[in-house]
Structure formats: C-alpha cells, structure tokens
Length: 70
Image (cartoon, rainbow, N blue to C red):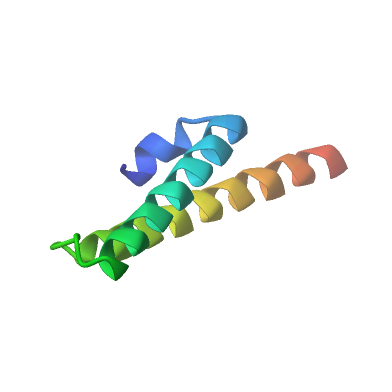
C-alpha cells in the first residue's frame, strides 16, 4: 500500500489496517518458525507497512490536536 493511499484513509481505517498487518506479521513469523515461508522479505515489507501506517496515524492526530488549539 502506497503512502498516498494511506493518507486517503481515515483514522479508524488506518487502525484497522494496523491490526490486520500485525496479524499478518504474526502469521509470517509462525511460517518462518515452521519453515513454510520461502520469501523472508515479506516480514520486512509488513514491518515497514506497519511503521508507515503508525507514522501517518500520528501525523493525523497531531494535525487534529493543533487544529483544536488554534
């Protein structure tokens, strides 16, 4: 998922995507431990996606907070 696509989501959708991605990361780690996963790079892809989602969520929260103050 691209950053521009994430920015078009609202906060609830971003939180839901974070939860889905964390579940996917857990499943990938289980597959690695049972030696079923061949593409280990998927783990880093999902970790980066989670980081991107959390960063944009935090930016949205800070933007909303600054609007309340102003």
